[in-house]
Amino acid sequence: MSLKVKARAVGNSTGFIIPEAVLERLHIHRGDEVFLTDAPDGGLRITPYDPEFERQLTAAQEIMHRRRNALRALAK
Image 1 (tube, rainbow, N blue to C red):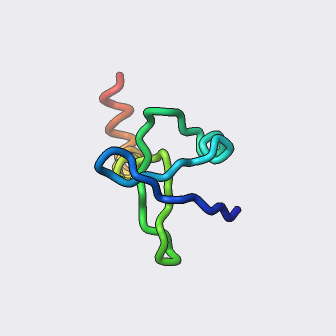
Image 2 (cartoon, rainbow, N blue to C red):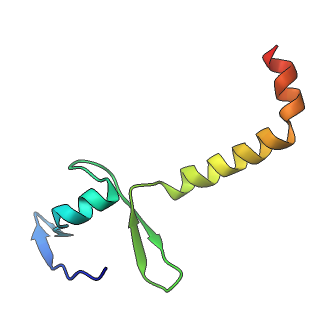
C-alpha cells in the first residue's frame, strides 16, 4: 500500500491526517497512542504496539521458559 498524506498545521505543531481505512487496518482509534519505530529500509513504521513492551515481554517469556520448573514449584 502506498498512500500520500499532507503535513498540516495543528495548533503550534504539525500533524498528518490518517484516512479511516488506514486507522481500521492498524486497529487505531481516536485518542490511541501510536509508536514510530525505525524500519529496516531507513524509513519509519507507525504501529499501535510499543516495541519496548514487546522486548520486555520476550525477555520475560525466555526467563519463564528457562525457569519453568522453579515457577511450577512456586505455584503449588
